[in-house]
Image (cartoon, rainbow, N blue to C red; front, side):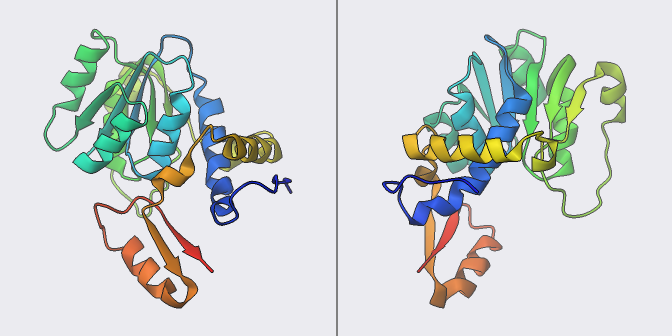
Length: 217
């Protein structure tokens, strides 16, 4: 249980839990000063992670997605490079950005096995891959060769990875109160309890403009 200061906006308090997940991801990533970090997937969690990385010492923050509106948000929230996976050769682009080395850290948060396969191709040798993603169905992994070739450290960066989740929640709450991670800027939809079915339909509709929806009284 974490105490929230009274001045914190009531409705937005429901977003502290995903902020705690971001705290865990950022602490697991632990970018060093000057590192290059690639984020594959710029949905709600990917953009929040990018916000956090903007406070780190990472020099190059590379955002990868297939939707231009999400890439525009990524640029707004601190990405130094934005790449569209449908239009750009991501491997070539990342190699160019990192001067042939590959990204020091890759955070795969697209929820697709294709995202993980891409992560193994753009990470540097003995780099770090974080997987906060949830893969909803069995998929074929095609990246065995790159895992052998590059020998990256792979971290399943889910809440169970944290050795002190209560502390993560506390850090998340304080970040929320201080506006360090302005999660409210990512809320694109609000639904009343009477329209909760509309909210779930929107969530599953693949609406390109949907980032995060909340239910309000």
